[in-house]
Image (cartoon, rainbow, N blue to C red; front, side, top):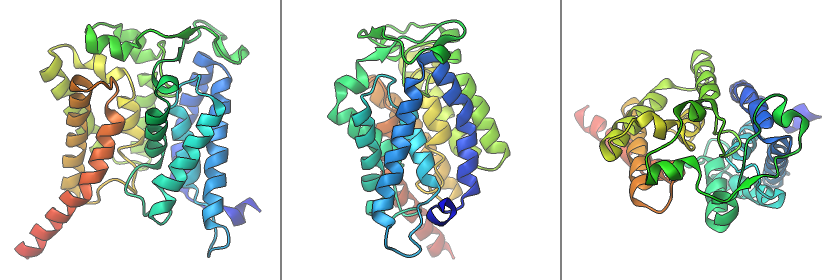
Length: 304
């Protein structure tokens, strides 16, 4: 029955495989509650897409819906109320995907649309309440959640204001943060898997990260690795800017778009009240990339 309901998309399956180590590490750091959050975002993502495709031909739910649900869950705080996670998933699918015509038609990353909606609607739950990660084994594997919550600034806010943090903790992920964004090491391993299996392109990753490092050094004058390993930049550069649907198709525009996203992330972090700028930067990149791509196509047409 499941085969009749869902499209077979091997590429999307490989993305899900790459997320497994990150999900397991999130459970270790924050407890089994994070798995419940991811399950809820997946369940309501599938439910919302089913409402749209039911009764249509072929009437199948895309395999990409599991990727959207998983990515959304991983970019939410561990303490997010379950009902908010459900609302975010429904917004992600309805307003980020189905409103454009369904799979393959959306211009924005659906998971990012869901997160931005939650961030703007519920800033307290999305930006000021953080769970302290477990330390030592077995950590969260024998706990539902860590009740010790943080109300102070997170590491990325501290760095924006003071320029301090521990590089090792940032890289390994022993810090407060969103469910799947804390371990840069695992994100890099996942990136290598996606590139070598030809699931994702390496160009937007390198362009975005390189741009972010360059402009972070220019704007802050400090080691840019601190800013790269904090927040959602690494996760976004691997799993979101590489989205094959919302990503530009022209090779040169891929580079231009990724460099623009890296630059805008630093600018938003530096000059706005939002310590985490990637989600808004990618949204702007998705907005302008069709225009840039159209300009390149028009130029190529005239030259021919």
